[in-house]
Length: 253
Ligand code: PEP
Image (cartoon, rainbow, N blue to C red):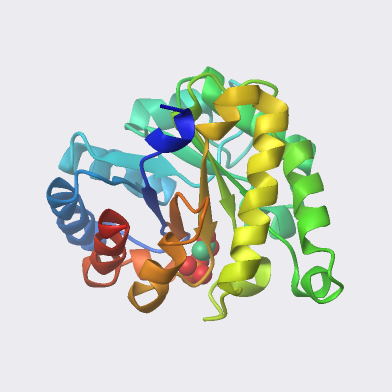
């Protein structure tokens, strides 16, 4: 059986700058639902301030960060290192989210360095890529995102299941707009080819998530697309009542 047959779906929530201790009950409810959906891997990427409390509240459930610094330590005000995330109980981190690429001017080289440091330090990684609306409208989406992925990928990844790529069209994030199934399939197919070109057979084991306005009403259709191995979910991950139906759709696929 090839690695492509063994990819479990991963549904990861990205809480962005939302959530204080008052929302830990949502983390607990989502973690409880995970036990009923053991065919699917789940994770919640939380604000740094919540990671330790969440990890203590739901032992065994994957809690992650939303970014990490590539350096081990040093004069980097406001940043967190891989060791700090691990110390707080995180099992994974997002790198290269478009909001950070835009607002913090993170380059592909920065993202690559973060992914390399995170994997080397024992964190799983979700590496985000995606095109702007202007690029999509110019018909350049696949070429641009493929180039972005090639420049952001770490040289080696170890276990393929520790590393995921999230295709997130910037124009679909938080807007309610979603690409057509054909456009998602075309993009994920191109990204799969890039992963195999880079990592050989291990590239078949890397999960490619779709992200951008995933919700209960569109999740089943998105999960049915070839090479969609799960989702990175923003707004609809903030409450168990919005997130669990997405997990259910993944577990039925
Ligand atoms: C995201 O920011 O990663 C995201 C996918 O957001 P949303 O689901 O809210 O579009």
